[in-house]
Amino acid sequence: MTIDSLQYNGICRCGKEHRMETEFAMIESGCLKNLSGYLSKYGIQGYTVAVYDENTYAATADRHPSVDLDIILDPTDLHANEHGVSLLMEKLPSCAEVLIAIGSGTIHDITRYCAYIKKAEFVSCPTAASVDGFCSSVAAMTWNGCKKTLTAVAPKIVIADTDVFMNAPIRLTRSGFGDMIGKYIALTDWKIANILTNEFYCDRIAQITFEATQSVLESVDGIIEGKPQAYERLMYGLLLSGLAMQMIGNSRPASGAEHHISHLIEMAPVGLDISSNALHGEKVGVGTLLAIEEYKRLATASKISFLDYTEFNRQTIVNVFGETMTEEILKENEHDAAISVTSSALRAHWNELCEEIEKLPEIEFLRNVYLKFGVKSQLSDIGLDDVISTKLLDYSPMVRNRLTLMRLRGAIKIGEHN
Image (cartoon, rainbow, N blue to C red; front, side, top):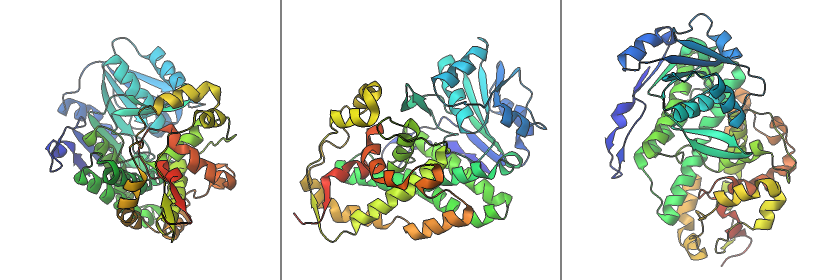
């Protein structure tokens, strides 16, 4: 299975020119063994460094590519943060020209960010179908305690060996499923922002992402049965999601309220007294169910009223995030993405918004799929008390200045007409 990314280059019917940094992706049994051939074919040359952690080095023991240097990081407490970046930068020689990430999400984010710092070429070799960021041109990092999307380097090529990612721990595969299912909310939030504020929206990108998500949902039985084609469809969907982000130049098609819930949990703000060791996709999967349930609740309310949107209160931010992180949160929310949304705009477009929400999968259907596949579906599954759900809905929009329906919840009141 191959993806010729360059087919997405050029002027789109949305009126914009999309430019792809990733030229090619291969999803095939044994393809990692031929990495040198792919590097040569796509003109990737220079001093090559392969970056693993100890687990992914062992998982690829029979197919390590021939490179100038292998760097193997200790996976203990290894995260995509300033510490992880420092660990790799200390080991990288000054002559490194091509950085090859052979691992899952954390290795990729650390390596792609270091490639950006060193102005090096970047190559992606996923060892698990665990996240959608393999093709991303940004790195999802926790920086100074806050979740940040930092400029990085997209891979020129992606080589995903089916033999390797099929044999990754099933928890990682379930995490990738959770990350993909989150696209339902991300796409809904994007369309809602387009309706309310005329934010740029490309229906081609949205359709590509939606179809990839649907394909993943329909592949669950095959993954459970261990069918390579089903695993490849999951990886294909994860890669397409990253390519969609490249097409638009940001994470809008792939990240909405569900990711903001995940990010808030990862940040573990002092005012919420929460902590979770769940994987990124596990948190996104749970956040997706929370968001769908809340969106459906709002859309089906018999009586509803609207207020003008108001910005977040500084004292509330201090109470949730503490003094240390408050300035970062305030900086993130400068030029609030929702400040122009008035009560009259919400009222005028409410039926249209509800039509978009109606397209979301039914919550019970998704819960049953999660249960069948063994995917974490409740806050208690990721180590949190279910009573924290309301606070997660209230405060998660603060972590990213992006217009979502969740960000507008305070302006939508159930119980009376206006």
